[in-house]
Image 1: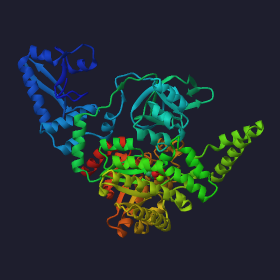
Image 2: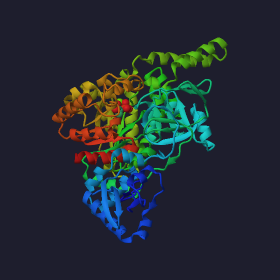
Image 3: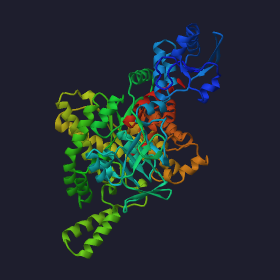
Image 4: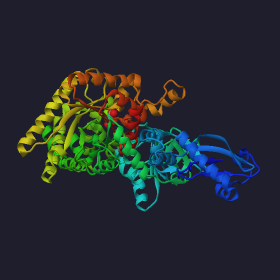
Length: 627
Ligand code: PEP
Ligand code: MG
């Protein structure tokens, strides 16, 4: 038995075994220990040489690594069988690239030989496939890669333990922006609730950390410090491993294999760049993410979610002050405090991305997301009332509670968010726009040329022309004022997200004032299918998929007939008004290979995805051209 190249790492050397006085079955069955081919070279040098030459001929003929059975009878070589050999992801990459150098296959053939999923495997820590595992549960494969660590239920504790050099897994029912420091500290994240677009999933993907979410089998008793899987009880502190590529949860520490950013990896991606039509941008909200994105080949930022900047621990009090302000004057005073903070973030991001476009989305989530939890507040107010102590504190908590109650909504995802915030509180958007352009001016002062800075201001959740027209006017007036005040100018665009069915249907009207569209397919999927992006993947969707009501998860792979059709309508209508309209996608589908085929065909200009999916999108965009 032989492989013409090493099937586990792709080394271009014939790799095989043989037995004397035996049949192929005896080698496969493992009853006798076979000899290596080096011994054949000594025992039967002529037959060996003929075998090696024949392997080369077969490889050239089939233009691929071969899995061969042969025999030698009375010094005569017989080839019994040959077929293309199975191989690991790293072997697939190395063999494809080596064969181009050997002029056996073309670059486009090499691109077709490496699956995006294989590329993804190479970029992350993964579990040694040879190891035996004790699988105990399964959730959604929310962010690829594998990790092991002690189970910790609390973000502060995760941070503390990680600082002492311990490896931890943050295990929570779900995560919120308050848990960010714990996510940063942990090797990986495991949640019992939430889908592929939940907070944990999105944040973990952005950071390139493994995450399994919506793991229904897992029941966490935060109070008592235990978790249960199938009624079996485990203490916090137990060691678990997670595989974010498959969604598996494993008891104990799994042996891991390192990521492989090899020369072949970069070379293959270079060939992909030569033929792809779609540009690839990244979703990034920090200068660090932006830098990583550029290193992985991003050609700009397609979505900078500005709310993530509001959520940093030291900023939340100022954001809350802004939200709790009783009148416009007080709100503007709080916004003035936020301005330099946002300006600094934008400066860092624009600098990392100089020479590339940066799409910055104005505030999108409902304001109550920045306020404390309603139930916790109720309990605290109740406690303070009963104890009858600090009356100032009680009053302060009561005011916050009132505001939280007044902002609370039954359906916040369909509530006071997106441009609806900008319309009701224009001062918030005005501050954000000022922060973007003041940051750009600072960079001009540092010697960056105006055309190197390409901010694109994006309005979220637009559904009506009037919304877009008014928001554009607000943004443009703010910018023009700044240009005048500072005696400077730079190119910019104002555009909209397309994430509501209505926006698709009136895209011709929206394109009157929007210079670009970016499809927010997370919300567009939620609003087109009527499936909550926060709940459905943990509730009925697994059943739907298992029972084949749906073929795939529409939050991961675009629903072609519904959402895809709306995307086509929006593109056609948008470009009928404005032929040069720039169009991209920044929902999670921007990093999904099957969805990328569709976006290429539909005529989008770019896809945008989390930094760690940029290489996958580059390869997928090239393969889409070759379909
Ligand atoms: C979207 O809706 O697809 C999107 C990119 O915005 P967000 O996920 O922040 O709602
Ligand atoms: Mg959205």
